[in-house]
Image (cartoon, rainbow, N blue to C red; front, side, top):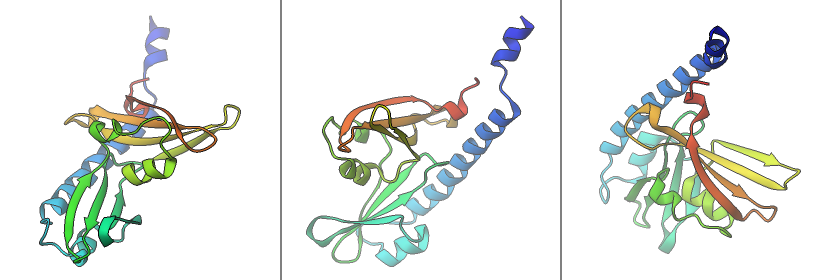
Length: 176
């Protein structure tokens, strides 16, 4: 029985990583919630957004002259924000994109660039050269508690088109 307990007992490193991920997610969420609350759609300007969130990770071209600012919270965080600035220079939408309803829109055959634009920069990209596929991973929250953290994976083929998707419990937070 002792050997069984030792086998499933988390190491200090695993506990430290779990604590670090949970703390980072909590702090980022708390700060971001405050920032989001202070920005009103149709009122806040691009300057207001940059003052609250800083420089975007990437700026995407949107429809009709709009620009989409990507604010990435990966790898430790569990949210990515896409903030649309309309042609008038005002915030027209602010979305947290790492969520099951967004993941459901990702379908086989979709190009990687489209997925990247939908979800933002992934937490991790892992090439599997022998299989000629790439796994892109995003950490996200699937509930109100930090223990509800999951990893959403998109598998791309050699043409960088979606083969499949899956969500699993975040291994950084699992007890093994």
